[in-house]
Image 1 (cartoon, helix red, strand yellow):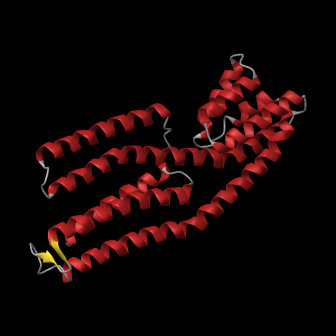
Image 2 (spheres, helix red, strand yellow):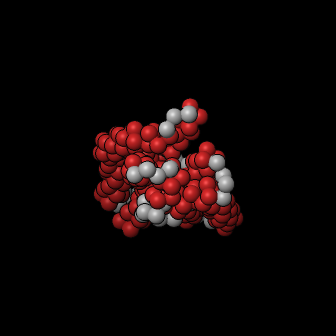
Length: 271
């Protein structure tokens, strides 16, 4: 599973935003006042958020895989310590095993210690590279134990149990919030279905004529209003789904892309 660093995310935002702005400017210059103008704006929005959404999803999967293997790593260190190895030897022995995406970072830590870097400095660099919440919570405890003069290896087993408990709680929270994310999707598609039903029945014979109750509003103008409402619900509904499911708005970008694309295809192909 590839790792995504901050530089790659910044480049993705810059490139996608530049392409999106270019499409918007082109639409303003060539499509202003035409029905396809809204389509161009929607395409620009999807292009702007799609690459960052993909990178954010990949990064979160990478960090989740790192966190899930931390308990195994710490227990391996404990087992190696029980055989009489020193802590650097235990870490070196643990680095020979497969911990998924955690393995390359662990090997870097061991190599830095072999080059003369202190145990504390190597851990701090490891913490900075991995940059996950559980690593930020566990590394300071290990460093503090080393400062106190106690046996550092003794801290690994309780930290391993603590991380496993936190992971279990996060998995339970994710399972509990999944139905609420499904509700957002269902509500959006019910809204789209309602629009389709209206235009297939109520507005089907009113093309170009004023809508009943709105003397200045034609069916094309009503369609445009509903189209804008669909896009707004897809955009903000996706962000809310990400905040509820994973705790960050950036996690909702993928939901936004899915809702925008599926809503657009449904409206354009059916209506």
